[in-house]
Image 1 (cartoon, rainbow, N blue to C red):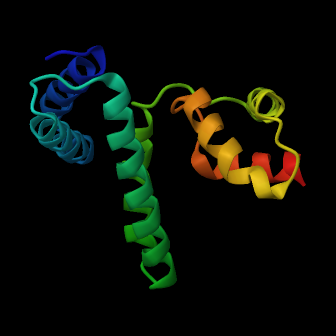
Image 2: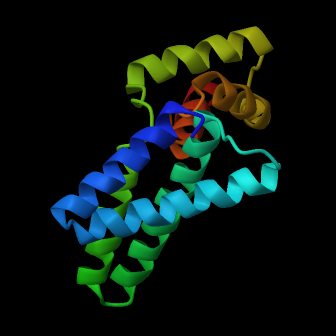
Length: 150
């Protein structure tokens, strides 16, 4: 085990097994499998916390999309199960920036790039996503960027 986050996930998995928390156990096992696959693909034994955050965000997005499909398909109980799993995964992301803090970061990016209008959204988004490094959802970054550049 290389990084602290991977060790935390392993500890939490063991705790879930001991407490017989089936949902948490299943979610953490899937996450560990994703981490092991990513580690193998990179050709090294260790994977950085930032890489794990990407995997966690991907898992959350998949579950939120599935929940939306279940809702529109008339299966609200399945949708809630998906959302419960996404909440478990969200525990492994860094603390999210508040809206004011995120606006400050994006404003700084806009001024440093000299962006002036909606045509610059792509450039600003790319730089802002690097700047926030997993502490803000892409959808929120896009909304605030569009608002500030409007």
